[in-house]
Image 1 (spheres, rainbow over the protein chains, first blue to last red):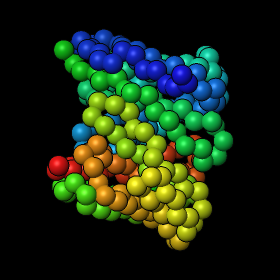
Image 2: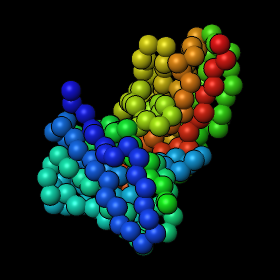
Image 3: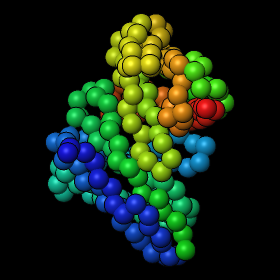
Image 4: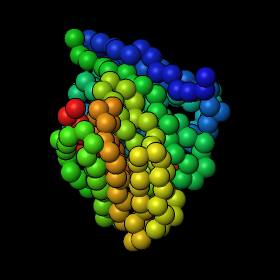
Length: 113
Length: 113
């Protein structure tokens, strides 16, 4: 089945540790996105990539980093500089043409130990 | 930046009742999207709207793209228990990057059997 796979489902981070969240899609989509969701909040954009080897900061990029070496993959690293990393992280992709809907994975919940 | 006001924040209804929720924007959008999110999962696209005035249905769901391009509503008819979840509106294509979605904060729907 075509879709977006995020892993792991749950992740725990120790203080001062970097962690990487995986996102893979087999929809042949050009554009990929990372969002953060906190209780009672809408989704906030962290980073997005319109094409391989290119990405842009979203609204809350501080403390996060990404790479886009392959069309299918867009991993997100939560660095130790992110002081409040506990949240639900969602990856999405779209066909990359203007106004095409984004489709989401099932998320990774990150917690601090 | 662009902001979306989604209302109501939450709704408690009886099974069989109709539901209406809406979003208004401080600026225009070229596309309106409605998503539903179940607990611990990613949002699932319900309806996409691409033209001002457009009225689109998906089963018991009906959504409209406002004439001013600054608002949209979603109606659910004859609600059932599986309609429970958080409903998000999202807009894109209005002055910023066509790839960036702006999300409302969601409407939490509870359906009493």
